[in-house]
Image 1 (tube, rainbow, N blue to C red):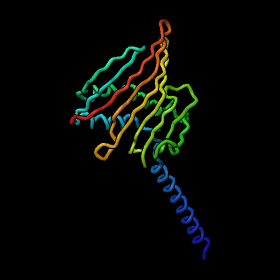
Image 2 (cartoon, helix red, strand yellow):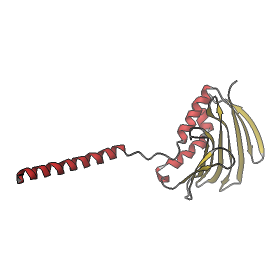
Image 3 (tube, rainbow, N blue to C red):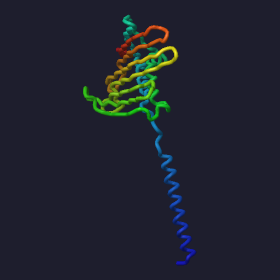
Image 4 (cartoon, rainbow, N blue to C red):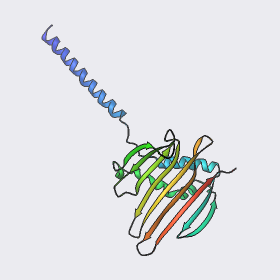
Length: 205
């Protein structure tokens, strides 16, 4: 075999390896998954809100503010009403902010009080959502409960709230049936306020 032919074959082989490497790198870059949020709270809430609007769900709410109790019943007419009612729960999506990336420890274990699995997100950083726990049956789509602690502070006040949302299997799928907000608010130039809100959601019969 002549030297010219040998050099040509070596050049062809090396060129093929180089092109294959480029293609593999390109494919890997294209297939690299995007970093997903820890938990898409917005999507979960919006899906339940759409169903609750269709079913004309009613909220029966008991609020206790510094020992004074108030009972109310309301039927939110649209998504704006529901978004306002559940506004504090939408704030839990803060765990997905870029500034929170890598700050949460994620753990998954069996709940020792039920047949559910608990997926928890906990941080030691000074972030609004200190922890968030999701209780589910078999898969995360079969959610049964959400628990979280939400904190915020500014020049006027500081507030800590413990949030719970509970879901039951209705017509073969989980549906929001109750929620509660317990906490307190400290005004820097005023007294503290303690409150508890417990709400039950019922469907139109």
